[in-house]
Amino acid sequence: MKYTALITVAMFAAASQAGFFSETEDNNTLALANDIGTFDDPGGSVAIDGAISEGDVDWFVFTLDNAASLSFFSVFASSGADGLMQIVALGGDVIAFDDDSGIGLMPAIQIDDLAAGTYYIGISGFGDVDSGSVGSDELADGSGHSENFGYKLNVGFSVVPAPGAMALFSMGGIMMARRRR
Image (tube, rainbow, N blue to C red; front, side, top):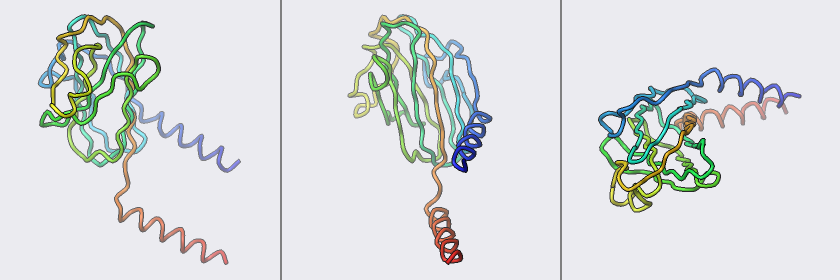
């Protein structure tokens, strides 16, 4: 019973920080990326609604005020759609790439303990770039793909506690356990 109440409260807290965003063109470069906001609270999330056409790439920018773990998951409207995703640091370094780690041909990325800063998410069609982009910093630019599909991109944020905060939390737990004896 106690755990059910805790889970319910956590779900409502996460849902209350959810945002919805509709992609707007022209967002084909980092300089033109749609800004989806600044995140500093644990449990924040954003759902993005967009569409890719032949030769198109969609870029989104966000800022983290604190280190965070992030999950990026996409869902496509067309069953045969094949897309890819890149996560890029402010300076243009590709820090993550995925083609098919989600369901079917959909990309999904999990990044643990991403430092505070500004980052970009790129969605494009298969053939635009490949997994070598992480080493070469080749950015998705829409060239080389003929995909056409609508998508939903879900981004979930959870703040990573500072090591000192974790130590204090642990010490508090030890003290509570000792008091109960």
